Image (cartoon, rainbow, N blue to C red; front, side, top):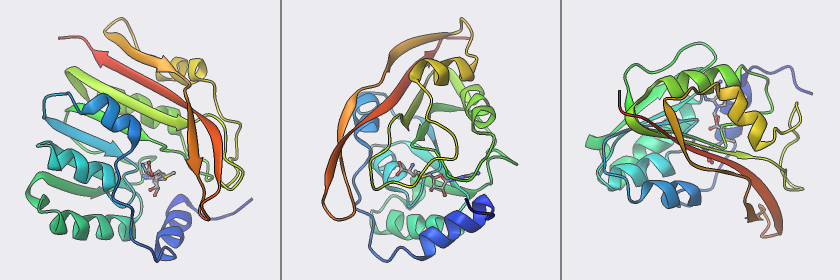
Length: 206
Ligand SMILES: C[S@@+](CC[C@H](N)C(=O)[O-])C[C@H]1O[C@@H](n2cnc3c(N)ncnc32)[C@H](O)[C@@H]1O
């Protein structure tokens, strides 16, 4: 158990990362967003920007939010290298404290999980509220842990528990709700089958 704040934990983690990001977007993002018309997108816990840069390269105006200034600095440099700086925006927030303004046709929370306790369900409800009419909310989270990943402070939720925690009303229709298996790859090339909770919802027209 650590006494670090979220910012200290994630800053230290990104400062210690020496390798470059692999540049690959999250598979579930590609699966569910590749056919959406480009609009405004918001990615929570965007890390070093691979998903935001992928969205921007497909014409989205994409905002990435993270608590780590170091991660966002790397993301901005990489966006420049990918030639998409004019379509990305990086905002540093501790999402437990503040949230970006505006509404978005796509809001993503991709493995937005932390070993440091924070009011995640509250943040995810705020994220759902930021989805524009006819927009999509895509949430992907670890449902089981690979042997090499850090230990969660709380047990992982089932997909039903996560969905219930979002408190979505009848203005939402499901696109996909489930816990598919995936082959995860570890830092030394080891593999393990893990489950992800995936919740994809569309907000109805206003
Ligand atoms: C497990 S990583 C996932 C990163 C990326 N979305 C991915 O799929 O690889 C979680 C990310 O959330 C960020 N994060 C954790 N707590 C946060 C908070 N309170 N506010 C904003 N970002 C936070 C971390 O810095 C980290 O980049």
